[in-house]
Image (cartoon, rainbow, N blue to C red; front, side, top):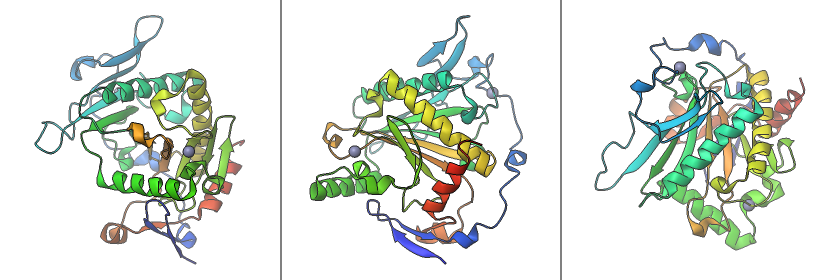
Length: 309
Ligand SMILES: [Zn+2]
Ligand SMILES: [Zn+2]
C-alpha cells in the first residue's frame, strides 16, 4: 500500500510505494555510453586545465588531482550569478568504483575535498559550496573515469535556503539540531565511533543513505585526519552494502557542508549517497512528488544484511 509522508524539514512530499519494487535490478554495466579518449587518464593531462591541487606518489606521479572544470555551468560572471567549478580526478584507474578504493586512498580523496572546499570558501563573494559525484551514465556522469566536482556560487539556491530556514526553525523550537535528534537517524545501517549511516524516514529515493557525524559538526572542511579515517571506513561499508544489494548501481554522492558562521548551531554536515534505481518519470517531473519504491526501514534492514556478506 502506498503512503504519503511529508519531510519535516524540506516539506517535500514523498509517496512510499513498496509494491513497485518488484522488477529485478541488474545489467547496469551493460548500459555504458560509448567511450572516447579519456582526458582524466594519466598521459592526457594536456587535455585538461592546469592543476589547482594534486597528491603525488613516491614516484612523483599524481594519484589525485583537481583543476577548473573545462565545461562549467558558470562560464562568465553575469550580473546575477557567478561561480567556480572544479573537477577532482580521484584515481589514475579509469574504471574503479569508489567502493573498491582502499581505505587509505579514500582518506586522501576526502582530504582533497576538504582542501578544495576550504580553497573555494576563501574566494570573495562565494556564498554556497557543494561537493558532488555522479557515477555512471544514468547518474549524470558524462565521463566514466572516477571524478567528483566542487562548486561554489555567489548566491544560496532557493531550495537550500528553504531547508536552512526550516532547520533554523526546528532548532529555535526544540533547542536541538535536527540531525542530532536520535529520532531522525533511527533506520540505522551501520555506525562506528564517530559516524552513523542511516536511511532517513522521509527520504525521496529508494535506498538513499545518509552518513553524518555523531557529534554536532557544521563544517566538513574542519574534519581532522582521524575523523576522515573513520569517515572512509563507514563510506566503504555503506558502498559494500549498496553494491552487493543493488548490483553496482550508478549513484550520486553529495557532501552538504555549512557555509556561513551563522549555521554553526543548526546545520549538521552530511553525506547523501543516492543509488540510481529508477529514472524520474512524468509524475515526479510534473508534481515534484517523488515515488519511493521502498520503505526506509526496510531499505535499512535490507542493506544491513549485506554488510558482512
Ligand atoms: Zn580515464
Ligand atoms: Zn547536529
